[in-house]
Image (cartoon, rainbow, N blue to C red; front, side, top):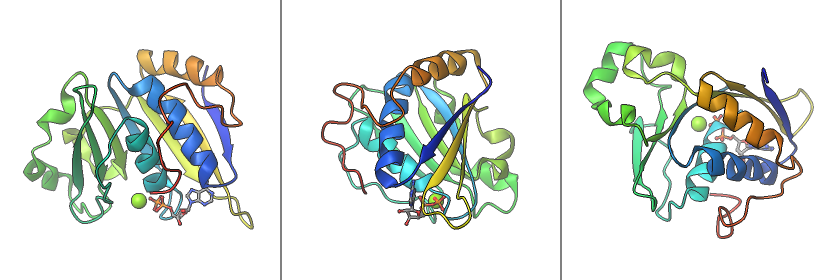
Amino acid sequence: MGELQRELPDVDATHALACQLAAVVAAGGIVWLRGDLGAGKTTFARSLLRALGVKERIKSPTYSLVEHYPLPSGNDAWHLDLYRIADADEMDYLGLDALWAPGAVVLVEWPERGGPALPPADLEIHFSQAPEADGRHARILPLSARAHAWLHQLAAMDPAGERPMGTCADAAPRA
Ligand SMILES: Nc1ncnc2c1ncn2[C@@H]1O[C@H](COP(=O)(O)OP(=O)(O)O)[C@@H](O)[C@H]1O
Ligand SMILES: [Mg+2]
């Protein structure tokens, strides 16, 4: 499967997609989130982190560049926003070795600014907003062998928002 596309007419639809993806990346995965400012990357990342069981406040990493969350599974999640990185060398000061750990769940906004310090993506999600429409559109591209398997799992889930059992019962639709 080359890619999967989903219409996200509202934030609840973004949340539902994040819940479904959480079920397949919980054991570890590198997810790059692409799209213009306002395309819905942070909204998606927050929903995904909630779905993975993060209870604490989820801050946008706009200024900190990177936020870390221990997961109930024992794995670690990382949320990066590299918009403010001017030169990929700046990444060296962030101490990102842990991102390469096998079970790490890593969500990266503006990955094109990260350079070689960033682990290669399993999955890329491109968010865009149709002109004169409120909703968003997501293109989900698998870039690794395990991500191809994830895409098959996602494709088998109801795009209308059927949430996988147990993953999103207490997840707030909005952060
Ligand atoms: N699927 C969606 N439909 C409508 N609005 C959305 C959707 N996803 C996100 N938004 C809204 O878009 C705005 C910007 O989202 P945000 O996640 O901060 O974008 P980004 O991180 O890409 O800059 C927020 O007000 C958010 O509520
Ligand atoms: Mg953002």
